[in-house]
Length: 214
Image 1 (cartoon, helix red, strand yellow):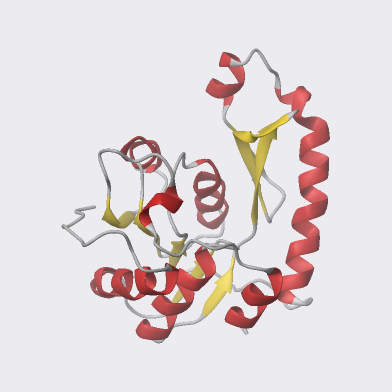
Image 2 (cartoon, one colour):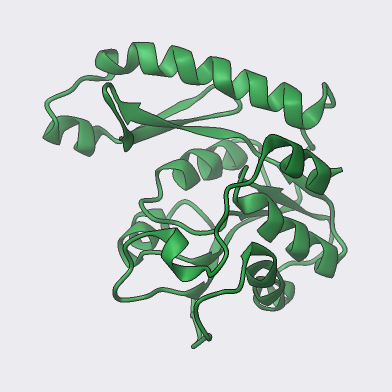
């Protein structure tokens, strides 16, 4: 992971994906696949996959928020159903895993809905023995990325990469052992939120995500 100086902010997610593709290109070979996190990671991953001439798919993950404070993440659930808890955050808030049972159930339902919407019943790609590139539009805390990377690792890829345009240093430090390589364009000292590093950071609809992944 050696980010080089880049001009900021990115115009939009598509531009960030094109720039990211040039950094990822030397890192992968053979039968690779891009897995993008909906919604924001999909336009980034779509450009990367197009330029590298490799398949694009989604990998669905849902953040687990504190009950009553959904914006405060304390874990995530990946599409294989495995839950990745942030036990340190839970301890700081004096919460137990059981306190999140209702949240986990609700997010499982939403995860199932999105999987059906994005994949229309087709199976997830076979990742065993392949180079897998997990892509998002940025990493703020690393909670959802951790859940995805662990899910992919369980499927036996040849090489597991995390590729993002922008990230917080603390999140990258926490993820350093979860991926074989991390490719990131910029790690700003004054990072506060992913959206601050894009001129156009509009929210995508499910229909836009579906169109991008074909």
